[in-house]
Amino acid sequence: MEMLRHDFMQYAFQASILIAVIAPILGLFLVLRRQSLMADTLSHVSLVGVALGFLINVNPTIMTLVVVVIAALIIEYMRSLYSTYSEVSIAILMSAGLSLALILMSLKPGGMGQNVQQYLFGSIVTITAGQVRVLFALFLVVLLLFTFFRRPMYVVTFDEDTAHTAGLPVKLISLAFNVITGVTIAVIMPIAGALLVSAIMVLPAAISMRLSKSFSLVMVIGVIIGLIGMLGGLTVSYEWGTPPGATITMVFVVFFVVSGAVLAIGKKIAKARKAV
Amino acid sequence: MQYIEVNNLTFEYEGETVLDNISFTVAPGEFVMLTGENGAAKTTLLRNVLGLLKPLKGSATISKKNVAGEKLSIGYIPQQIASFNAGFPSTVLELVRSGRFQCGKWFKRLDAADHEHVERALKSVGMWEMRHKKIGELSGGQKQRVCIARVFATDPDLLVLDEPTTGMDFKSRNDFYSLLKHNSQVHGKGILMVTHDHEDIKNYADRHIQLVRKEDSPWRCFAMTSCNMPSKPQS
Image (cartoon, rainbow over the protein chains, first blue to last red):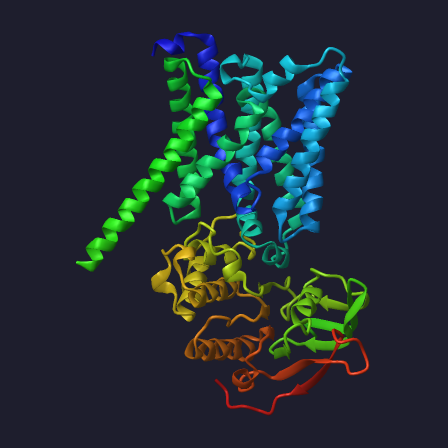
């Protein structure tokens, strides 16, 4: 493994493993809560934090965290207004976030194109040891919360009214989930890039949902697919010299297409056997 | 003691009164059916009872304790729950097991007694053989039976059911009503059930509450009538 001789590749692999575990866990709940585009939205909204950070000379990562948490609260409030069409709140916030980010960027004399580009297309191979440590702390928090709250989350995700009558604080759980997801996106974004965060969160979950009947297995398979996609994509990107974020996403897309084709063929074969 | 107590409840939707001065109770061991034409705000009334909506006037309260003085547990089947989340990636067994979580098992392992409850609940609706199936692979009626099994698995003191027999055939419906009757009479469960099936269910329910359109009010406003059902043979 010649590539692992480089420090930057070691950090990239460590970060990939951490992201591959937490992203599909959060992603599965996002998909089931009909919030698949939330990762996309929050990554766009977080550009407001980046732009604001550069504009007022505050660390963009801190500003991004603040903005994303506020956005997560707004999304939760708007979900209650459009309970049947929860994607409406996400769509509105996506447009609002991007517009505000563009306006803020235009206010900086001399522009901030290069700096913002770094956030939009952030590269996992430029990750620092400090970022890996932050990611590891987030990994522990998400894993701990998932271990304790997976049962309440399962019921809240299945049906919020049922969860309410079971005595669960549905709004609080929902809000906490949105905030954790927001913080995760804000941390992953400078690493994977805003444009690719959504794919990394949603695709492993979407693929695993088609591969298993059981909720627990869907979660485990999602993490395995996440690991294969992240580590495989990173290796391919190193060997071929392609952008890591885009390569990882394409590996997930190929996985999605191939698994879909295999499933379809499998079903046809089973049908043919039954007919015989 | 009453499990449900609704006093002079009035509910407005977008400035229009839809429920006017509704009062009723559901006691432990009582099986109450709630009927009314389409749009009669039956689900709205249930949601007020459960605290999912707030009444404009009056009150709807659920007892905090059961007859044994323990925390009252509620089993709720919302309308069309089975079709609402049919694509949920879960097996029948996982979903029904989740009913046990609210019995103090949110953060604890399920034990042998929990698994026994789950098995009994699935067998009572004839879905034990289908326990390893994915929910999405089931028919509408089967999904509904799984949701019912989930509620039975919680072993609740009070059952609040919103058209739970949608999609079920005649025999399954009557078996279900018979099971409810058994639960109210033998195990003292309080039951409030919305249904359109009042001809079949009148053989089982103790009381019939009907939401009726108010003649002197706008077309959407409903009040109620209530009557006890004549004594029926036990199930």
